[in-house]
Length: 287
Image (cartoon, rainbow, N blue to C red; front, top):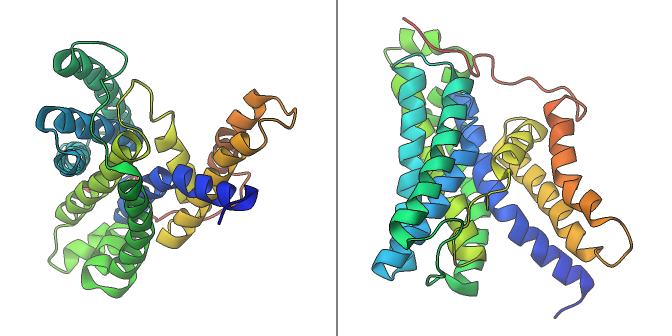
């Protein structure tokens, strides 16, 4: 079964998948009270590490695992900086983005002996790509259940609202935030792997193309909920797919390419409507 509508839906899902992973990562972090500006960097290190390990081992599955681990490590760096050293979370996230961009660019010359882009590697293939798309939706369901139906999720949400209350219950909110940030980093890393080993079969500088920041907008559009963020990410994916669908309509391609970013800008500037973030989102916890 095929046709323009089916093709559009398929392309929407393809473009939405990495945004869903990154948006879910943003929801988890911000529910725990950590403002994760580093989503772009976590997507980047996941994408690069996945390709580098697939190249060195010949196994895209090992690349998948390594990309998730690299994203989790980047999440740990952000979590440690925010919870143990009290670094401003926006500064820490921006620094990690820059470190990821520069480090992966340097890694291209070390691993592949060339700047700009890697060699083609064994990818996860079309079947693997659709498995990762389905897994993105499953991840939203699991995260929703974890946040709203488990004791751990209650602690995470409490850390985002009132970490001192969590501390009064005998739980260190810094540990809860750190673990949440690491899990979120792994999710974002998986989104990066999807880009490089699912949708494509290589890594190139700038391939994340601001998706981490669009994911942040999806978090706001989705009112800091897994299903809401997933729905917003699908919306952004539809806007990205629209530029390919309407490329012969006479509408300037530059305008179509800018649509997801204009929508993200609208969310970040409040045009999309006012929604209350977790009360302690981005606020360092100090004893």
